[in-house]
Length: 110
Length: 112
Image (cartoon, rainbow over all chains, first blue to last red; front, side, top):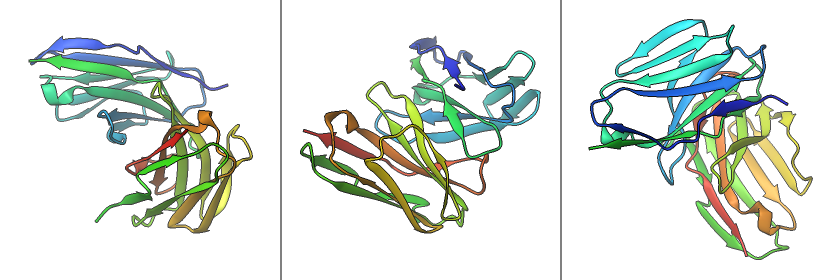
């Protein structure tokens, strides 16, 4: 059974701080990794995708992937109250099967 | 233009009824999915279709039957609804399997 794990939170950070979200996965054959943000009552929306080891930056967001450790993280710099949401980690093996983690609830305090 | 749309947005029904949820994507994607998100917000894949062909059928009761009349549409029919079917059902699509998925707005199903 393929598993993706995340701390459920809530993770609380003050406005302007760095929020660090972590995800581990069980399937060594996983090839693509995604971070989605989900506001309460809304659908998931893509924040970042990452396919190879190392860092990938997009604005205030940086995804980090370490396949040897089976670990992927998301850093949010200069956190804003509008970043308060649940962040979902998703893992795929280049097939159609996506496995989502349980999500980490982030709260950015003004 | 809405990329992935679902109807209805809300569905309240009695146990034992049969209901359908429709999904359409106008992104030209080949792959479509159905997900169930339960009260604990856990998002779990139910089905995946590639070009109208069923690819993934996770451990889902056979009361759930997906149908893809063409690659832009993936509908979900549920027979003999049970209390435990209450959840939010999301449709999603991606260009091909393994690529970024785009989610519809969700259908909130409540079985009484």
